[in-house]
Image (cartoon, rainbow, N blue to C red; front, side, top):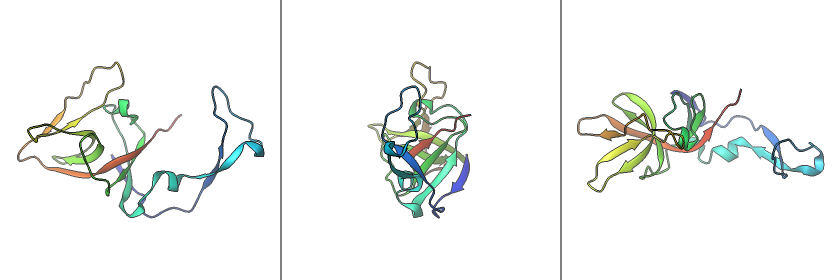
Length: 146
């Protein structure tokens, strides 16, 4: 994963948002369709001082909308509770996985394959002596097309 620092907000870049839902086409960009302007900083970054982004490699989280070549926005201030998708360091490697805690207190990091696909990535069980540090919780996933 490549770390990108977005704690410093870049200059505003607002783009038009259209109120019409799009099925298999694109609405006319006529002014009467415009709902307003969308600021991606406000949409994706709620707490700039604790937010960063990482680029993703691999396919173990496709079922959660996290794809190879995409990015995730991570907020260090969000509490990493079971069920949250987190970015963590495990024995020196950065991973993005879903946090799970069993009744016995053991911690696991689960992948999330695409629906109908067999999970080729076994859960990572965090055991004694392993390096494990949560860097933050994923708040958004960004997919790049083309």
